[in-house]
Length: 544
Image (cartoon, rainbow, N blue to C red; front, side, top):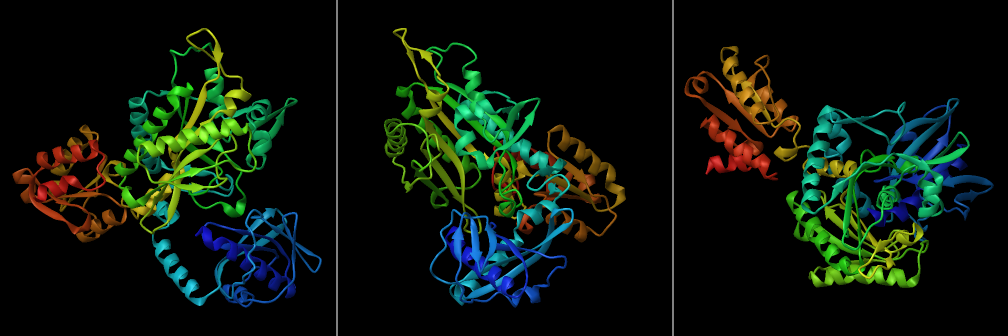
């Protein structure tokens, strides 16, 4: 989709100019995850048919100046000024959506969303893909499964997780806690807000200023944290360290805030507040290569646990960006350390020029979902610069003081984004261990409610999330409801099952097994959950 964005931006400019020529007042253009948008200031909205009249190619001369499109004295703000406007022209448009919002209480903007392509075939292919993508849109799945919600009165890009959504978050966090513990991390907790002095030392105040949320209180300026690393650095500095202490590994499920542009917000995929499974390793230079190799292997292992492996995972080395801190020597050492680690593991990787962090190069992992989209998730970053800026030290064998190196790492990346990707990849039918409700029991009649409740109690004693859907509606409708709500396993019980101590099990894909001893199913289900299997191994082993 990234390759389409330059031509979409050109399409947004053309649409805005057409609207201006018709007497409308376009104020902003920009790009979303799947389309472009044009905001016009208007007291009345437009219909799709009205907007489509302006969605056509037309010749027009305009200039780009200081993030604004200048056309015949009309200035239109351009939100995505970092994208180069192509010389080619889109001639095939589609308007996708019309909405309104209020930047001020007395001002209304009408937002027109659409796409534009150079050929009709590109447009048709994209609309076909979009139709499929909308069937698995995580925002719709989240609403249908009662997982999370967004509210304008709470603020754009700030998500509220409901009880079932929090179960998914906790399961992911618990799994990563096990990973971290096995790798020797110590979990910490750090505050959300710090004085601006901290962000000035780290370089975020200058090089990350557009994403910072800053405010003044009692004469001091504070910033809401966009990253956890400066706070972890302060923990390192809280007492003297020696070479014997290293490596020191801190982990945190840290809530960070980055003020993304409003037009770029998109469900859980792009928010303003999110949780990272963050980690920082403070180590000696001679420990660096081995640490990076351990992280690479563990990251690939975690992705395989979720079913992403082989050609569905790509690895990149992202190099020094134009705006950065540190010396050429520091960047060269850091880049070589990452490259050597990947080469020694026999890992195939690409190069992303100038896409590293401002303080160091990084390894980025991308995964491909069920719709063929690639998502950048995990990252491993080597940093010689922040230790220098914060004057970090450790006492070496000979008593001299030396600078440690920092490795920044996140395996999930953004927990929120990862949940969105999982929901879309599995179309709401999450693996059993992640599902908010793992088993739903359907008694055929009220006569077997006692037996159904005994099964429920046994499941709950085994820490399995289960519930009963009593016989208020037809059995077929209750089965359909369970499927629609993504429940992995359905247990059906009638008189025969109650008399014989058996159950009928239904899994996904309309797999059904009758006359199964409940204890046999329970044992296999516990193993499936314990192993965090992606597939429904409990019912598959019973069916053999």
